[in-house]
Length: 615
Image (cartoon, rainbow, N blue to C red):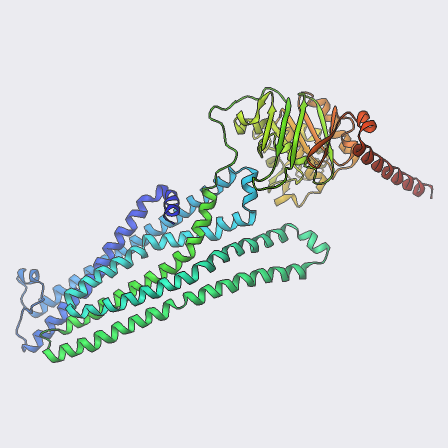
């Protein structure tokens, strides 16, 4: 726990000044508040003694000496001085309280800002293996709900958590000064309260641990349904998904209800202790006042003790609120620290290579699995050599690890065994940014961001000119449809590219990758949504325009790879066949079966079209 607190405290950063000033101002505010009952008690005692002496000025035992030293001896003068002192104390208390609030807000909001920034930065440095460990919904929950919980806890720590114990201690000291043996009442009450709070914490903490994990599941359900809204509607599954969400939401609500029921005992315990103190002070104080004729225990002392008792109990009540909030935020802090302490599995070497000479690729005895705990390799004993500028096709069934093979090139993952080389150098020896700048990937899931088409294209090259963007789009067969929009390249792309077709998104993603002018260009099934003619035009343009770039095409269609220099057949994470289209037709059963099935399917479609035309 303390390690996590130390870890999070680093995020205070430039808000250290406000974080220090806030508790200092709070302490001064508390001192002012505690002095007000002290002076009020003396004033009441003075008025009582004055009235008892039939208007004769007296100096009761607890009257502050310095007031008399100013030469103020008449009744109205002394009362006026007391009123002025009380007014000054009240104004000072208000001023320092406001300053504490201002600095507390500044520090807590700044702390949350830095914490979110560090969380986001940490997640951006994660490798795919790290990202696999934390789901997207879980990261969102940690960046929002968990950070808010920790922020509120931090706000209470630098203000309320300072105010409460300081008020508690200072009020007890003042209560002993004013009330003497009456202060023993608090010694009896405090252990009862502490026992109750500790018991509540032990019951509530395990529930909070579970409920935040269920928050992740709830957010995952929302994210999945919003992202797949079109699919949900097309299959008329709104009611089913609504019930699923309601069940997840009810599960979270039920756990929170259980936790809140336990925490609700805080208030009754506090009220019980408060009333015990009030009744005890009233009974014992009244008895002492009456029995000693205000000599042993004056009315002023009684009011001060009662006020200090209330302040002690209120400080304990605030401590219980802090206790509840920190109980909730401790689990949030643990979840945040899990992300912050997660070490990226892929890091730069000490003296990285800063230049990728060419697009040569070599896999030497490479095996790979996604997790150290995984029982089976995704890739096994891969040996492969590709020359710069060659076009390579990769074919294989679903789950044959085609994407896994190419994700080792830009170090999205690292090989578990063996060596992957690019440009003759082990990829683990390159600077990560340099390597990834030299390898462009158009993944299966085409991701476009909200903004204009130009904004999205400049992800490939932030300094690209309009002419360069247009040229890349021409190569990707995207220029014509872009120019069909009224705004052309300034056409606004909705989040996720929802206002574009699948084929349009794929072609823009290809153009974005081409803009990087990479040494290696990887198309991971990224022309599946375009027709075969457009697919052929894209491949022809790449062959002619970027001949020195190594081009790797992962595809389901034989037509997309049959003209490649090398075609790789993957089966269950192993290379089943390797060679040209003609060689594989003759020597590889898997390739021949795929080709035959696709050729027959194509012939049937042509035949049907011919029959339709005859009609």
